[in-house]
Length: 238
Image (cartoon, rainbow, N blue to C red):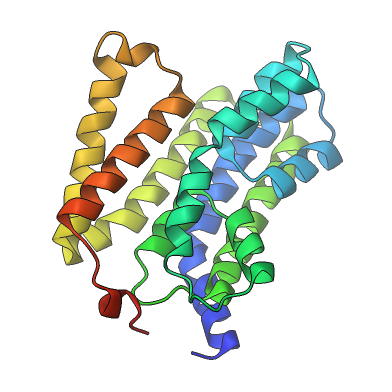
């Protein structure tokens, strides 16, 4: 495909992510406003950090007067899963893809962008990823700014409802693929089962949320690679 076609395709597939992020980051912006962050500070955080779990966690640390070291370490642990996602998506890029494309693609990975990218057939074009990122980062940053500006305007029950939007968006991305590919359905079900076990089983439930995600990701990735290997010629289809 041409560069413009790939980029446009990425933006089109990123529209649901844009809408979901707009709602969730709106709630984040309101919370950021409550602890004293300005529009510029909260907006810059969303534009450069781009991680819902990490950013909501950072607000707690900032409000408690935590150190920069504590803030940095918490972000490292919470977002470590994106390292695994980057390694996975690198296998979908053409071997000749230069570093100056790989680095921005890795920066723009989120759970939803990863889901949209990994389920896309054929090789992954960096320009498709740029399209996804353009939609997602715009929605995340814009929603944050609007949330800070709104302040305490909205009641708490509406803010809580907005927080659920991201899960609906993620389901909307995954479900169509589970209907097409039995392997995707198996992976989703396995991940759900393992996530429940990690949450409810004693001792396992004491593991931090960030490390639980990493453990589940590694385990499911290994199982999927063994049970549903992708042939080289299939992976390289355009």
